[in-house]
Amino acid sequence: MQAPETIDAEDLCLACRITVTELQEIVAYGAPAPIREEPVLVFTVDWLMPLRQAARLRDQYDLDLFAVSLLAEHLRRIDTLEAELRALRAQLRR
Amino acid sequence: MKYKDYYETLGLPRDADEAAIKKAYRKLAREFHPDVSKVAGAEAKFKEVGEAYATLKDPEKRAAYDQLGQHNPSEDFSPPPQWQHQYAEGMQGFEDLDLADILDALGRGGMRGGTRGARRADMPAHGRDYEAAARISLEDAHRGAVMHLDLQQEGGPRTLEVKVPAGVRDGQRLRLKGQGGKGRNGGPDGDIYLHIEIAPHPVFRLDGHDLSFDLALAPWEAALGAEVQVPTIEDPVLLTVPPGTQSGRKLRLRGRGLSNGRGGRGDLYAIARIDVPAALTERERELFGQLASESTFDPRTVARQEK
Image (cartoon, rainbow over the protein chains, first blue to last red):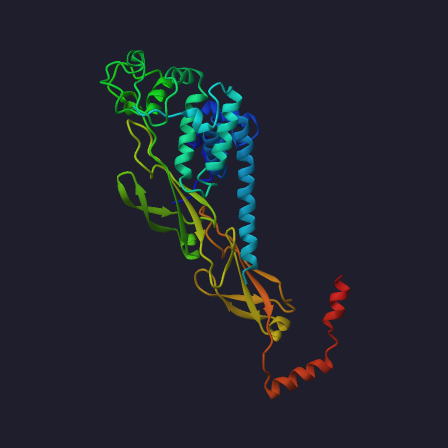
């Protein structure tokens, strides 16, 4: 069993509870950026959690889709930085 | 039916405009969000605020709500008779219903033509998602593992067997698709999101799929070179330490790190650390003394030249 590296638009929408039309609008705002657009939009799987969290915040705070795109981008950046921080802390743990 | 004063919940006058409603909602949602607030009952308050906003932000629902007039919170009241015709034809009455359900039904075109709540009950519904955390060993991250998770579900506690694939990273959130709550009426099953934490290892440090450890060397091993046995995540292997190895040098064992789950592996780094004997025998003292008197090596000079 392997962890998948990519996720297609339909699956991403299902996990994030958004429609494909909403995802297309969010993508048009710049994030998440697909790695393939044909025949369907495909994303790296590291967009899943940030977009899911952003979509949830949208419901909770009545945000618009532009805000969801911005949030997803920043949340992904936080994920990346946290991973780097964990790795650096591990190097210090001697 | 119990009356709920949505305006009071949001702290608004009854003639508040749309912008004021949104502003009040966001402020309160921020204050009582369960991820943020430590106040007792924050989650319930968050839901209350959300329910009030769901009605007041929608002009049609708000107009219907305003039709009810103002009552004291929790006071019993009867909705106007036309609601029975408009939103709940065929239903026995409103007595057992929650005000939010009726207004919610209004947003979906009413409850007409069916039994109470029939529209909601027949709609495909996505199964519930669950989030859980799991701490696994480095060895399990390398080989993959089967875990048993205890989840609190609607129908009571449930133990779920989940397969953690080889190659997971520390901090990774795995989506176990379709392993959450069951979907209803043809809706998809929910997912489980598993937050993976890899427990610290007594020997190896982790960086992505790469591993590193401190390799203690005697001064003569570092100076002359040596073949030393070193640990890996599997069996020990022989590592060639080149002559003149400096402290801090990283010696790479390619492909001896963790599995990346795609058929490859990270690397293992042995980080040289030169140790000296804490106490010397007479003979050792003699040999080190001889070396000191004959060697031209001055590490301070080397360090200065390297700057």
